[in-house]
Image 1 (cartoon, rainbow, N blue to C red):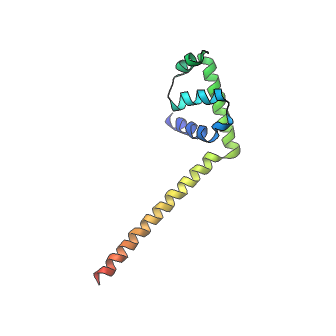
Image 2: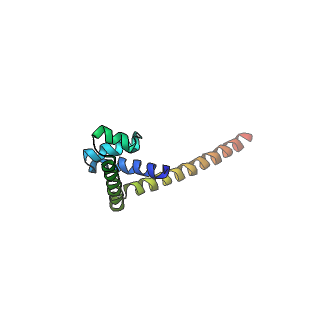
Image 3: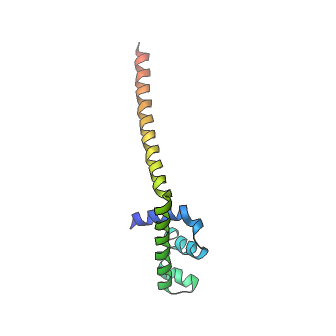
Length: 106
């Protein structure tokens, strides 16, 4: 469940401009502010089922946008490459420090 929530939050961040204000409100309240379906339905004076249906449709739309545009996938790939680069650089710094210490011994 946490994985799905995290994924939806990222997809929402990337694609929220493509959603209607109503869809944005429901998704924000449900995923970001952790409102229950019942609480959202009370705020908007609609049935709990209407909120559920809207959120499910919006989730499907976000997944469809991701299939076509791959913004989240590319973000993940960039993040992994950056982490790899940071790891490589930190190893090089350690090697450089050892070389520097060896030079100081002479």
